Image (tube, rainbow, N blue to C red):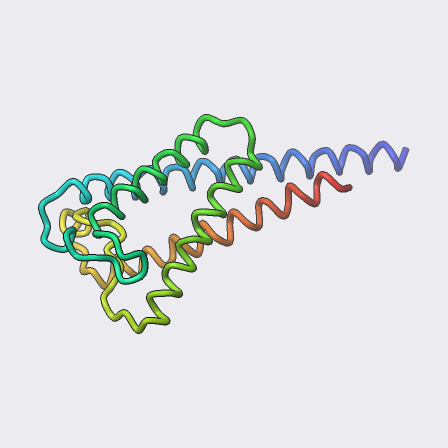
Length: 160
C-alpha cells in the first residue's frame, strides 16, 4: 500500500515539475517575443546610435539589434509551439547565458552606458535608460535562473 502512495506522490511531483516548467517556458516566450519585437523595430529605425559599432562584436548596433531581435522571436516561437520542453528551455538558457557573457564583457571593458536592450520602446514607455537597464538585468536573471532551474528539475526527474 505504501508503494502505491509513494508512486502516486512521485507522479504528482513529476506533473507539477512539468507544469511549472511549461509556465516558465510560456512566460519566457512572452518576454522574448516582446523584447525581440522591440529590438527589430528599433533596429529598423533611424537613430544615429544604430550606426555606432558595438564595442564587443564590432558590428553596427542596428545590425546587432536586428539579429538578436530575430533570434529572440525564433526562440519565443519555439517556446510557444514546441512540445519539447527541454529544447525550449535549452534555447532560453543558451540565449540568457550569451547575454550574461555579453554584459560581463561590457563590464570588463568599463562600458558606462546603459544597455539599449529595448531600443525605442523605452522612449514610448517613458522609461529612463538607466531604469530600463535595471529592469532588463532583472529579466535576464529571471530567464537565466528559471531556465537552468527548470532544466535541472527535468533532468532530476528523468533519473529517478
